[in-house]
Image (tube, rainbow, N blue to C red):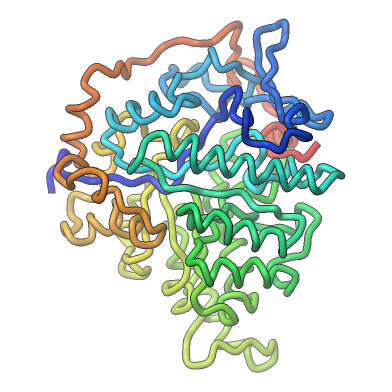
Length: 430
């Protein structure tokens, strides 16, 4: 297959929420309590809600900037590429990158809506969750039909409310919900607890995929306060093995036969050995641990029910025979620092060049379309969805690197970074 003939659908991108997103979407009694994007005297922006100040961490939105300017400083919308927060410019950035479709994870409310979950007034919290989801589905995805896969945040503090919200947004065409890779770290019961059964039942009934994004436990893996930041960045996708093990050894997948999870931004290169080890553990220990997978092995359950997601993983593609090619999906990660924008097609072909056209189509778009009930071909002809066709539509988009730093100091110039501080900057609940 030629690069220009690829069709790319990304199941992991991110939105930097814009000002005014809650306008007209809340009951009147809560409208003046809505989160507000405020600009400080130093020019940086932060979201203000319920006494919390949530900055935009630099690494969350660095596409289009020179790599030496990447860092952890809070930023303003003016420091970002407009496509980070403007939906129409986002689509132009997708097109110039040859990307047809995108699923966008939240930023300031955190992956599971933890910001709203911490609100003492739970009626208000639920109104905020619903308003956010309505903005995302109608205001963001709805603004550019055929270009986005809707993704909802949950009312995670109450599984019955979370289930009701899954059902509500399914009626609006949303069949994905973001959830924590380890809810126990957020102060709720673990994946091994029946507490979440109402939510799992709703997702199974509605065909809603539960997306577990790395970092969604509000904790990042920190080995040492003295380790360079490279250690943390390197370990994050591999660390997804913890969520995979929790899922497999919990009763969830065996109890809800139609329920599927996605390990978002989790990579795939680690999966063959992890499954080999889990099968070994099952075969050697299940008689005394009490685990029972019937006539299946844990690895077979994983391959059948877990959607795997990767950004750039040549080793994983080379070892796809140990996985289920029908469940492998591709990610761009725009506008984060790991993103391959604006050369995603060229980067992908480095590891797809020896893969059959049939498998390329599955990995790059067909699997995502099937699992997330995404049908872009109903909006535009297939021949208009290729890398070549999309780039022709966006030939005027400038992809050159632009310096946007105001007094920026690189991590290297600062010396060793306290990784505990880094982890807090990305995901703390404070």
